[in-house]
Amino acid sequence: MTTSTTRVARGPAPGSPAPRPVHPLAWWAWAMGLALATTRTSNPLVVLLLLAAVVLVVMARRDDSPWARAFPAYLVLGACVIAFRVVFHVLVGLKAGGPVVLDLPRIDLPWAAGITLLGRVHLGGLLAAVYGGLALAALLACFGAANALANPKRALRVLPASLHHIGTAVVIAVTVTPQLVSSVARVRRAQRLRGDVARGPRAVLACVQPVLTDALDRSLALAGSMDSRGYARTLPGTSDARVAAALLVALVAAVLGTYGLLDGTSPGWLGAPLLVVAGVVAVLAARAAGRRVHRTRYRPDPWRAHESVVAACGVLAGLGIAVAAALDPAAFAPNALTWPPVPPAALACVLLAAAPAVLRPEDR
Image 1: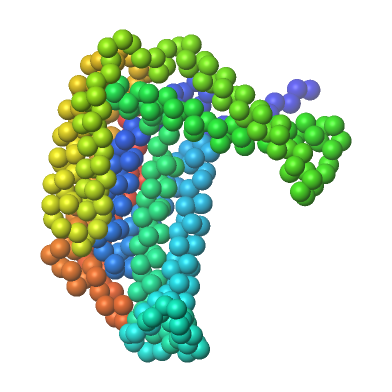
Image 2: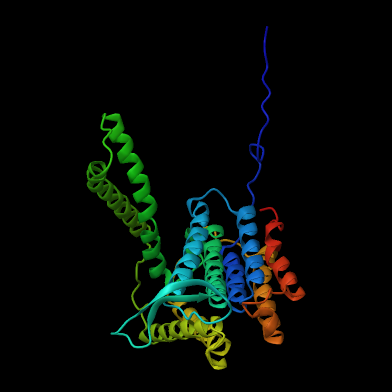
């Protein structure tokens, strides 16, 4: 008598093509747009909605890679930021505003005039500290989402040819930590096979030397294999001090422009105008430097309509929040002692930000 067993396959059928990965720069553009949105409002409900959109997209679109599984750590870090901000507000923050919620003993510091520890904690100041910490936590979640959704190794592959030296160094550097983790697992497995079941500080000390040696050997092997394939090789006549100086100026201008764009109290010229100038100088310098480098890219990631849609969802959501906050500052920066409203424009931007959770890329 023959018994047949039928198995129900989960996921794609064997031999079916895997979903096409999204270009990493599309996810970074989406995340940067949402990061801009979180810095343009202090409304806690709007920030929570943006944070929910970020979590929804990450849960729906992430894979099983180690960097994708690290996204909850960014949420934990954000919760720690909120807790630390509240603790420091209770310790040394301005306690004025609203009814008293904590009446702590006041400690004057004789060596620091005007600074006191503890004292009365008012509701308005405490809520302002929570709202500020929540905005920082949402900002961390945006960058964590970009790291979770965009493969860092694939992101390094899209660097322009003028930055191939930096890309090679970063590829070697980012492999150290994963190799260190795998080395720990291999060393502990070998110790258990030999009957070594020590725990505590003794076990840690026994693992340090073989783990570091194995991780360093694997990193050097990767560096040697990349060098044998021509990575980071400089051809004669490929260096130009003027191009390097232009790239350095563009980098400094981009840092200042990004700071001005994220800080709403900075002068107007320090934001978008300086960022545009930095982008133009960087593109021109990168093109000039790229002509001197003759490198090919293996299986480049395509930029198709889906990538444009994903990037546009984040960028348009960020710009929508910024414009709405400028037109109606009372709704996007309400008083901490009043119940915050939820503007319709904010809801539309949040729905736009969460759209990549249901949008799927086309086939390969």
